[in-house]
Length: 222
Image 1 (cartoon, rainbow, N blue to C red):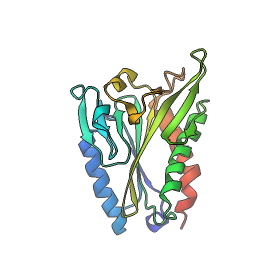
Image 2: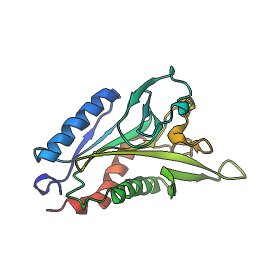
Image 3: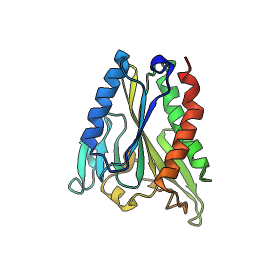
Image 4: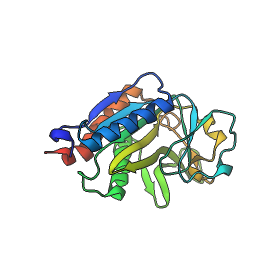
């Protein structure tokens, strides 16, 4: 459970946060959570344009290595993109105190995104064997296709979670051309704006906060 029965601390950053700075914070905060000296934490932020490589990233999936900085993330998964217009949620929770089920935690992260999207009248769906949250594109004519609107990447160290989610609000989708996102070539990526939804980042933050509480709050009760 959260330290002292408290809810996680929420941090919101308006200016883009350098990736190395975010990694350093997560490492430090996760260690403090393990030691019982800090509360759990959810950090909502944006990054400058960059690519990250998870532990399963295939070298051939980095199509344009000189386009943006490339960072080794230490999380699970393959290559992904971060940049302005994408809301990243770094989630640092004590999973051992929350039942010790990593698979259930990943499903909860997916559910968090799905419920957030529903607030904007977007139907997000899971797909077996494909991490993240997907939408059916029927707005482009037949045949319909599936695009990824949010990515997941998780690292668990001594039962404390790090990394988390990345929801495309209004990023430059052309930036994905430098990688094979998550190693999947046969499907595309989209965003709320690409789906015709105009949402501000504060509105997305409010939705993420409200839906996080519906899924995770009861687990933090003393």
